[in-house]
Image (tube, rainbow, N blue to C red; front, side):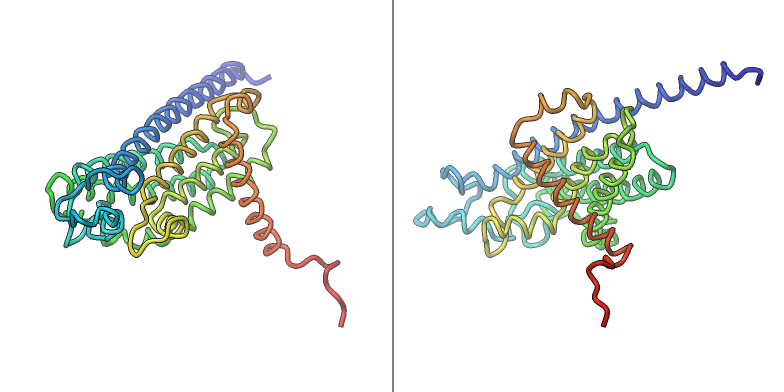
Length: 301
């Protein structure tokens, strides 16, 4: 018998319980910040695009009064973009300030959620590194946008240019994290503790939603949904919808598996199913690439 073993066991159990509490607290904060991000971002988008949906007065001066039917087209010009604005720029009310708050909250969320992933140390380290990079990108973008709105003119943060490559790289990273979360969740489906791999499917949806929130995926997807010569009127709203899906995914990790099906609305269930099918397709293709072609499908020459 090892002396002090019961004490060590109790300490380990206490440490695990404390870790579970920290994970729950961080994820609750993440959900609240996601709500803030979605609300502030939607308000910013509505400031610019309301005229495209409900009409009314334009949000800026100088548009031709006799061409009210074309105001929506005028506002699609990059001249009115409030995310990382550049000269020339026409501010729209406090849209840039609200957008900056939305992006800052989103950056904090990515870091918080990545810290709560409980897995093997190298997977945790990889997730935290990726989450930190994406979070930094959002924070720098949000800070520059917020300062521009407050100054009424474009203000470029010192790290904006060096971090520009992340805008191209991060969508692939978050897709990889989504696939990894799904595969790890399937491998460890028997685990039943908050923050562990049993949350794999929910975290996969979260990372997939984080992919959709990023500038280039949002830009091209919204252009396909509502074609435009510059910015689509769905820009901003699309990101906030993805943020809402991410909030639901993180919130579901705080609920027992038995209670999830009762609380999740049918539209979100459909989004989850579609996301998981897409990730399953990507995962299967990666697995085939690792193992090579199926011998039964090859023919001898």
